[in-house]
Image 1 (cartoon, rainbow, N blue to C red):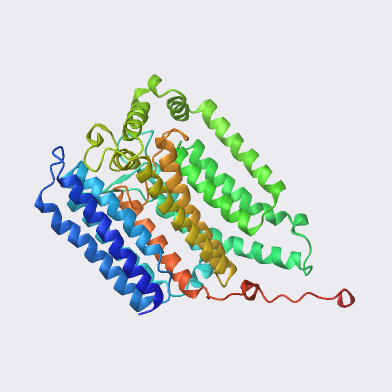
Image 2: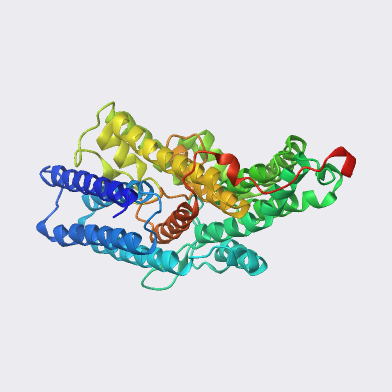
Length: 439
């Protein structure tokens, strides 16, 4: 067993202990109706972790040993609080966890060589755009302004927008990697400056159009925010030109201004953000979350002692509220630090990656986790308008859980190919600087 797998197993045991302890403390609370029936689901969740660990030992033995335990801890905490709110959700949570584990194993096994994603770049881009934009057009039933549209398939409902974002991340990585390579060559003086090439605006135009369609035609501010943050971060890593960034930000600001000034749904969202009491349809959850977070204080009410039953959307869009209320500011900060560590490891892998494509892909996935988590928590504390974003790995959102597990598999696959060397300059492209006499 490699050192990474030993670290992973040790941290998984710690995550399992924290999960069991949280469920146990909640179960002894008089206000919680947990029964012995949840034990098989709890054991089943840990069995899925064991299967994932064994799969990593076999298929990715040298991959990073921190990534999976961090996500397992977040998923375990989410399980403890979801079944504390509604014990009948245990079978639903386990079913989605099983599907997410299967998706993880398929991605880990099937994507051994990520370079083929570059070869099918056009198809990946079209598929990602369809997954991102189509659900708003074909979703059935009335649309909730503070939630992303879903596709109702009868027994289950899916929201593939975040999967579309993940697919677009691979497309952007394949597209932008050539700009990053050209920037390196330009810095070494081998090619003409990119400033004089109009093609550098093509990614910016594409990102602006995609984000503007989501803002203006779908009025989905949360999805637009995550998509824009992902694209801008990946583009900055690849190109990093302040003048072009200023142009893009101005264009996006114009799209937001058009939507806020002429679209009724967008006006309602911003109005509920500014004054939740004036629009109780959208503002009620924000109002209740404020009271719940204030009641938690520094150390919280303890697992099972909060007011999660009174909080709408506590198992999905506002999943951070019961966690922060019952674990307090300290517990909420611990969750934030877990996401920060997850993102930090992802960005460190991006720095160590062998190819430009792997670097930008790892960066995009890390920013995807960061943007999704930050936007979900920011909406709870009213830093952002009411959004339809769920907390990754914690909230009971099956579509997001599957997407995050696929993204995790991609990060682990990149980490296996990242060399463990002390001299990072060995990873730079082999570009020979021509002398002035040879030019």
